[in-house]
Amino acid sequence: MNHKVADLKLAEKGRLKLEWAESRMPVLMALREKARIEQPLKGMRVAGCLHVTKETAVLVRTLQAAGAEVSWSGCNPLSTNDEVAAALAAEGTSIYAWHGLSVDEFYWCIEKTLEFKPTLTLDDGADLIFTVHAKHPELCATILGGTEETTTGVHRLRAMAADGKLKYPVFAVNDSETKWDFDNVYGTGQSSIDGILRATSVFLAGKTFVIGGYGHCGRGVAMRARGMGANVVVTEVKPTQALKAVLDGFRVMPMDEAAKIGDIFITATGVRDILVERHFRSMKDGAIISNTGHYDVEINIGDLEKLSRGKREIRPSNEEYLLEDGRRIYLLAQGRLVNLAAAEGHPSEVMDMSFANQFLALCRLAKDGKTLAKKVYELPPELDQELAQLKLGTIGVAIDALTDEQKRYAADYSAGT
Ligand code: 3DD
Image (cartoon, rainbow, N blue to C red; front, top):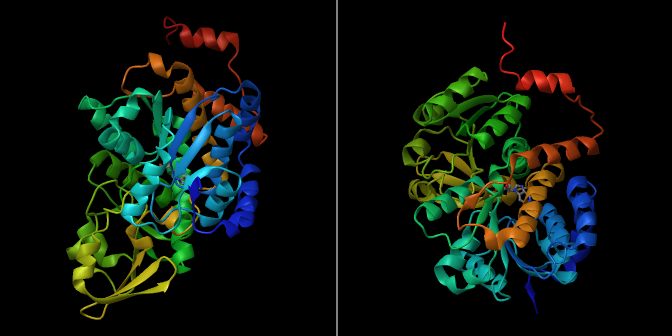
């Protein structure tokens, strides 16, 4: 058996979800049809560790169409969609993933994907590549390269490379403009609100919505929360980001102040302990807290447990903590990334570009990996314009082009006042 999933009987429902996603990922589907002929990943074995969603399944099928053998695990204990995992297993994909993994099971799944000795790795958070380096360094000799999907993972890999510990080249897919400036902003903006609404059905209009962090993700969430009529408050540690939030029309204050007035909280910093004991002590009765950062370290759950005399799951992905003084605080998705743990992650249309970058990065590694140094690379910036042009074409948007005269003017530094 080359898979372990929750329930194979869910496969048909998963196949329908996959069909829906394929109909909304035209750029990746076009790349798939081209690759089906050219077979750029022929003979490759791709070990992937990335949220098992309907969009990821479209990427998996594209890798397979391009000639790769694939073995997959989810990159978060709560983000696997069991129906999608069942669909992939039923069509023969080696996949080890189910919703609600323990941490030990999480790493067991990663280990299983390494059994076929991959030639390429694909990560979202760097847990797979870190496991290879820490526990199976011998595999690095046959791995041509890897890719990394998210900001947190790229930070980890850059630190490994700076330490001289990176044993094969990696493409920072997150750093492509057609990934971070779309997925992280617009994707996280919509999917985080989606996760909060699915877990609470709360009325957002008029509520004080506190966002920890005004990076790409926080900025997207702020934009969409305002769109739903919420009163957005931003907290930050970086002066330039805080200033941008003020100029974008949001209130900015320290979390110690925001904790007293917030109705709904979401952390999006990538840093630990953004919400801690003193914040829980000052929160209003009924406050809702959530996280959309990659790891579950931004809300200090130990502190929350310390202040509570009990907890119960009041709705799926929604735990009510009853504090000693009678106040209640609602923790969503056990403090894990609420967009994927309580909803379906970003919509297919935006993952279309993220995964086109993933696919092209893997094809580049298959072709040139042997010649690349053991460091973190970025994809060529011109690829962003190509992908954005393809995307525009799929939504029927035409744009202008510079004339030769305009190009000459732009290159002519002597043209002054
Ligand atoms: N991520 C968000 N939505 C996703 C989806 N529908 N499928 C797969 C992964 C998904 C996570 C990405 O935002 C990733 O780029 C990240 O973590 O930064």
